[in-house]
Image (cartoon, rainbow, N blue to C red; front, side, top):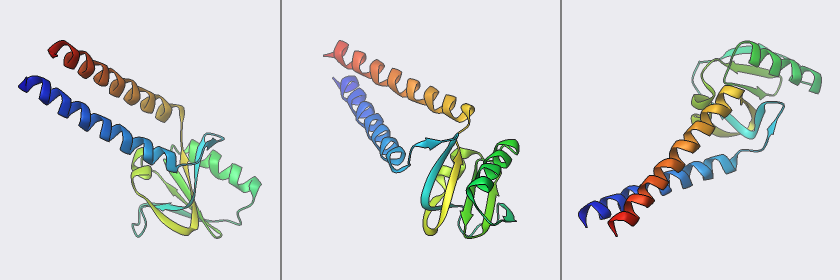
Length: 140
């Protein structure tokens, strides 16, 4: 009985964590060209952790920014007016440090490695849920 209750609590906590992650992911728009565009958001606001480049941002130059971000293995770049800031941190760190800023658009580099990592985390969470369910069912 005590073990079953502990497993129920673990399952409840895991469901809350999954729900919180899903709510975070739902806030982000769909992927485009290997990048997730986050309108009205910037990352690492007020921290000097980026490489700044002055550009006159047009669609053609946006593609160049994406290529530069990929080539340098940056986690993200942020467009604010005519300034583009590249962030060498991991995409997970950039995503974790997103904050609202109506004057900015952040482009998260959702590289295949990041997609693979997210997929691995999702599989791990699902396997833990199944383990907790089967343990709970066996205890009942």
